[in-house]
Picture (cartoon, rainbow, N blue to C red):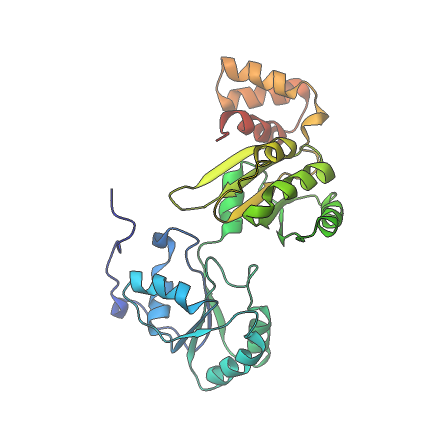
Length: 294
């Protein structure tokens, strides 16, 4: 197997088109460094300035690919004073890149006001898209993906968090939530109490060596993460929409277990869905909690 700590290729910058002056919103890997795009690397190599949350953190990415761009900090504590500096550079026709510590900038990261002001000033704003923990977790969850709401981080204090959860109860979409490792147990308990036994998934360390996705109902997952030792790494919670609750068909679990013992996942879902008159997506999500639990 190739060594993931070493660059997989040498980038020929001259073979790619030079970036145009303007503000470039660039996604960086959420874990596996191989997930960055060639266009992103080309722009980062040629940018006049790369603004990032933590220059020390981002420098590791650039060293991996042999890049030495000029770095400057843009984070929540310096954003207001740095925006004028960036807008002035854009007015001078510079190529300015904005990245976050990991993933796509502006998703639970600073940058919205900068983009808004750059647009208002008439500067070119473009994106070099790539990795996103939101989309990665959603696609691995086994839950409906046709409509979803990204919630970001819920409140850290219990009372405020529970109020936010109640407000989300009737949202007709899958919910995608970020959570800190030390709060995951309490958060899942509150989600189970507020939303009921909906199917859900907890994704951790996405794209990394220890990537893990645990699936089950919210109450089951709350029990899994109820221990005193918090898990390591970044965590994303995905929750199925209303109508996916296991209690809507008390015999769903029994029917699924019986069908799965006789036939394939696909055929079992079709049989149980027809037998109980339940949506296939609901039955499928519940079946995954049996067949793919970590």
